Image (cartoon, rainbow, N blue to C red):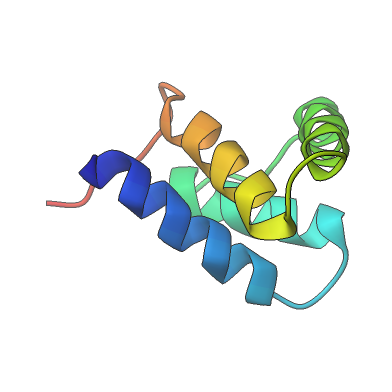
Length: 79
């Protein structure tokens, strides 16, 4: 439950970031992994974002993407 709450908070923060969806995706990925978002991954993220927006609001879409990023091996944890 805490893991998903963290994703929800990241989703809300992502909505507030300046720029277009690509800029927001890059910001979110870097926030979660401390890495730059590669072009092929960015394309997948933007496709997923658009698909999610067809049935949900922007915050939900970014929450789901944040959740996906947090499930990557490169996810950073802070102690």
